[in-house]
Length: 99
Image: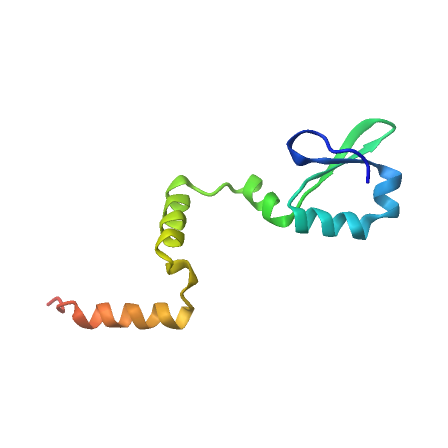
C-alpha cells in the first residue's frame, strides 16, 4: 500500500486506485480513513466513507452531540424502539391530563 499522509489519509496513484478499488473502498470504510487519489503527483480527488462525508456535509449541531454523549454515558443509547415506546407510555400515564 502506498504511503500515508497527514490526518490518516492514504495517498495512492489513480492507476493504483483503479486496479485496487474494491480493497481501497473496504479500507476507507473499515479503517475510517480518507483516500487521496493523485494523478501524475497532483491530488485530484478524495474517497471517504459515507459517515465522514455526512459529517462534512451536515455537521452535527453541538447540542445533539452533547445529547448523544450523555445518552452513551447513561447507557440509554442501547434501548430498542419498543423499549423507548414503553417508557414514553409510562410517563404519559403518570402525567396529569390538561383540561
